[in-house]
Amino acid sequence: MSWILGALVFWAAMWAVNVKLSKGPKTRLISLVVPTIFGITLLVLWECMVRGLNISPVLLPAPSAIAVRFANSLPILWVDFVQTFMKGALSGYIIGCGAAFLTAIAVDRSPFLQRGLLPVGNFVAALPIVGMAPILVMWFGFDWQSKAAVVVVMVFFPMLVNTVEGLKASDHMQRDLMQTYGASYFQGLTKLRLPAAMPFIFNGLKICSTLALIGAIVAEFFGSPIKGMGFRISTEVGRLALDMVWAEITVAALAGSAFYGAVALIEKGVTFWHPSQR
Amino acid sequence: MKSFAPVLTVVGAIFVIWYGAAVVLNSAWAYDKAKRADVTLSFSEMVTDTWSQEKPLLPAPHQVVKEIYKTTVLKKITSKRSLIWHGWITLSATLLGFAMGTGFGILLAVGIVHSRAMDMSVMPWVIASQTIPILAVAPMIIVVLNAVGISGLLPKAFISMYLSFFPVVVGMVKGLRSPDAMQLDQMRTWSALKPTMFWKLRLPSSMPYLFPSLKIAMAASLVGAIVGELPTGAVAGLGARLLAGSYYGQTIQIWSALISAAVLAAALVALIGLLQNITLKRMGMLR
Image (cartoon, rainbow over all chains, first blue to last red; front, top):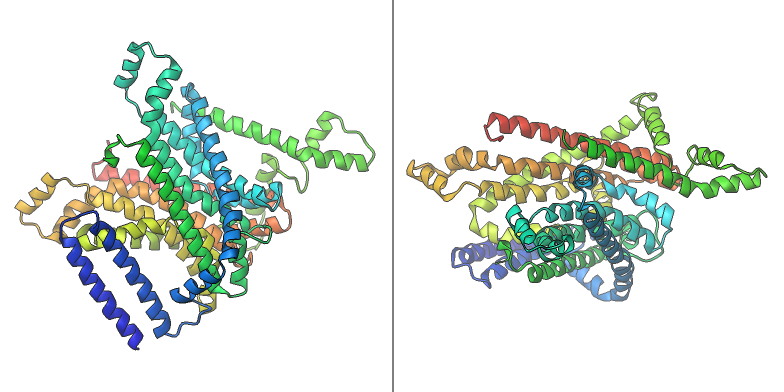
């Protein structure tokens, strides 16, 4: 009982702190501190609830138990991370996004193809593509190649749609200006339209970064060698070793956030001129 | 209508590639069969064989269509082999999850717009929540909720909800903030209270933002429901058909489940598009 009471008091106190902080001037430090406090509050709340209500570790392990398990099984987690993220997700992401980018450039000169591809691409981007996973696992075998293939299929269309959309982003006046300079098609493309497309391209890259990790993990449910995050999650769930599952989730969350953060950082450097970055 | 011909061309090209790929992928098996039967295949014989195998690597479109016809029209709806029955199970989980996700998302957005503390502390975590590959965690959620005694529709709906609340939050926060300072000041000069301002100004002006979010949420919700069906041991639903198909090498079954999921997604998104048109037209927002 005291655990629960303590949790509620802690929650109320931290919320009061946050309300007070957010009333003040919005500096960089404060907009970092406030969400951190909220996150810590959630963790404390979770820990206290698990202890106070005596929730079985089979259902929901406490954060402390997960942290201990995480620290104790670093080698396994690293092997899984390399298998799923480095080999599966990252290679698929690069191939898929690269192929989509090149396709977008290829159809760029034909408005006819663009008008046809955009609706179809939008349609396919909304489809449950993860469903392709069993088929691709059947085609490419159990190892990381099939995971990369799933990722390629998943990221291709969102990336294609965003790039095609982006290549249209420069306005008429700017394109006319390029023409008065006597710029060739490729000069216009590299000097004006690709830079103008960058915000859209990075939007696509960001969306795809989360899709890639999901695709790689889900594909492992349909068959994989005895390593990999998806494999580990599905087998450890079967053994009811939930602390290990949560440790894998932590790895996935960290990897996903870091991936997204890295793309966002590159975006900041490339599209420094865009209003949303200033 | 201007884009009708191009779309048709692209779709046609996809079909051509599909048939071609079926020939390439399935030809090995066709030659293998012929070799064992000691006959030599002519090219046209090989092609017809690749398009009519029972367990092809890639089934030809007409095989998939035939399978879908067989499992929807020719089977009773209550039969466990009926795709409509499986589709309905997936659909109900999708809709429940979508409703919960939309409700939760709108509530969260209202809180974020009205409370600065909530905006600053919750919003970053809402965004961070989506970098966690929730689909990967789906099996655990299903198994755990099963252990607590919650089974059937709800666990799947929870996964759908987690996937679908995010676009709604982002869209609604943007939408509820879309009235400009002049409009807000006008409301203030009428000494409108916060609830009045919400119902009469903020909510109506958020509608154009709500519907596109709903479309994304619906598509995500369907994906969630399908993945949620994978770990339950392939009992029922389109996801279960996928898993069972992959266990037994029934490629035609996998493809028919996949295509029906696609049709379902397209229909649901189109339905929201229709609602959007009607609503915005009646509100006078459609240009």
